[in-house]
View 1: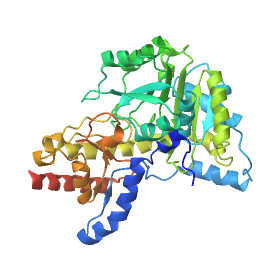
View 2: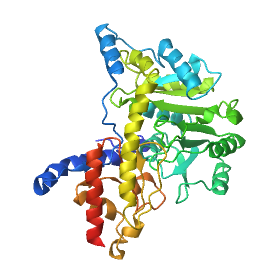
View 3: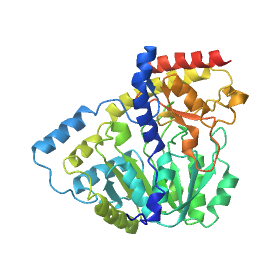
View 4: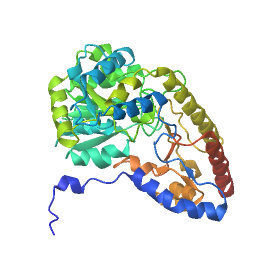
Length: 403
């Protein structure tokens, strides 16, 4: 039996979040039977809200109309024209044409084809970092990757960033709003990051999956919209329908760049891999660009969840909880609540919570080089308010019994 396959493929891992989710499903029935209490899922970024009616209805209509043939690779002109309007009005990105947009098989493919442009190259991004970047995309494209640590309060060490970005890299990955911390980068931070990338001729890969999910009157700023960078073509912005519209199973996203060579190459890679977004889904994507009022209702629900979970975590003494400004996650540091006898156990908090029917993601899964052993990520994307209340009660119970 041959095993001498592409060495880069051997380095790809299944997302630890997927593995953890499967583990949770396997132990939940026994826990619930033994305790009589619900198992609580705080680990995955899947949205529990249903697909918006207008999108579902348009998808069904397209199916009934027989739109089941091969899709237009890179996206139909009609979808691209609707996206141009959204990109101009919401993202404030000017001077685009349909050729600047590549419709992709989910936001993940938008990122993956962007990384593939620089196969074998070197890049960097802030840490902690979404696990799929370091477990899947980086090894798949044979890339070297440098993690640039955010400070404990998730602010940027610009001296360190400048040193890293001037070390002969090819790209910088920027996720804003940020997973797993919920940080929303300020306009001043984005300008500094962009100018450093431009100074060093780096391709900016801007992951804007959570562009609409913002709290406390925060505004989303696309790095490609900054006046200082509007004439810089080497920015690829990746967007998705999965989070905002609960369309994870539809597999629809898009990449946007003023670098038309990059756009054409991404379209070719995308055609080779998936041939394009399913034909009967594409008309529904046009509908999604006109549903801002529905988006606001969803974000209001997420903010209620964030506030309830945040207040509950802040009730625990010696727990450091930076307040997320966007996305669907809270990334607290439990170092002040770990007994000295467990300081060697890098899974202590994860295992402790799991044993009490609370599933989260260990901080160590958001890095390859740093120590986040005392942190975990809570997702409130699929956790209704009543379950969050139960989770808060259980957390207080757990740590009161220890201390």
